[in-house]
Length: 264
Image 1 (cartoon, one colour):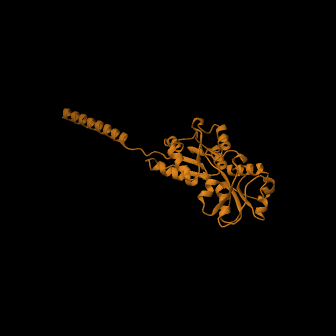
Image 2 (spheres, one colour):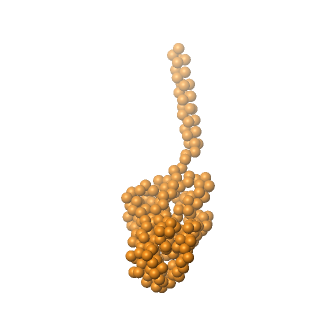
Image 3 (cartoon, one colour):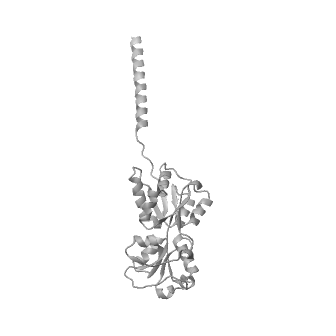
């Protein structure tokens, strides 16, 4: 009886061992769902970056989670410890600020897009104004206000202030500025007819049927409008680097080109 009992236990142990090996093999073979990257991106990238995320997902990747705001607000979130994977700024200074605090992976930083600065008016407006040195923007505004993102912090507003200053117009309009939290909020003021003019990116104007471009600011009137991207030190998504590489690839830049951006 003892022999039979020991034999039975041996067989049972072998069966359990084989079962554990089989489960381990099956476990290794099971697909593991990748964690999608969380991307903090400038507000002006809304349509284009969503399209790029769709294109990435179409390649059988997890679709990135996108969070849009002014670059200044996003940089402050990162500095406060936001657990994100990637940052795309609408200017170099805010990326510099994050980098200076050791919050990005510097080897992943690259400027990959460029934009233009434009003056817009409501689509139904008949006002016309040519942008040149000393152009009469204050007179054109009348009692109205000039919609701009925060000229002291938000990239679009900073570019706008720089351009108006270079053209000798800023002193006459700075008291007429309707300050918005980001470039899309400034665009919305013009779309709703709450401001007769606004300063936004060319891509923002292209994305809206409710405004028209009055003029384009000379490129030499403001710093170059560039978009740097970088992975953050807090990156945890294994997909983040792949998505970053896609964005800066020829295929990725082609997506942004459809929305009016130029590649760098």
